[in-house]
Structures are given as structure tokens and as C-alpha cells.
Length: 65
Image 1: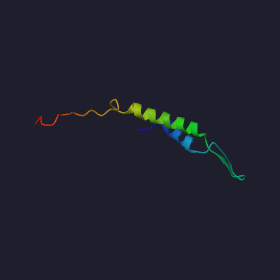
Image 2: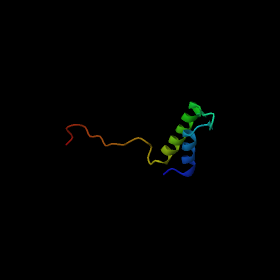
Image 3: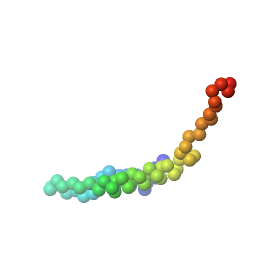
Image 4: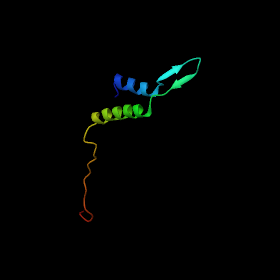
């Protein structure tokens, strides 16, 4: 489950960097900053998962019944 800081970072990355009301001027966060925020959140999510991220499967050669 995402904690409050993760939610805040995701909302800040999705919201505009600057906005004006009557002049209708909106500026987004730079793309590298959005990518960095996404990588940070994904790395925290990956660190919380169990295991090494590599699925382990049992292999049996054909004809070994």
C-alpha cells in the first residue's frame, strides 16, 4: 500500500507546475522531472515486494516421467 508521501509525490508530478487563472497560462513540470518521480515511486514499490523479482520455476526434462 502506498504511503502518504508516495501519494503526494504522484499528485505533484501529475499537477501543473504553474497556473494562472484569468490569463489562462498553465505550465507542466519538465519531462525529466516527471520521469524521475515515476522511477522513484516504482523503485520504492519494487523494494517492498517479496523475493528478488525473478520467478523461480521447477524444470523437468522431457521423458523424465
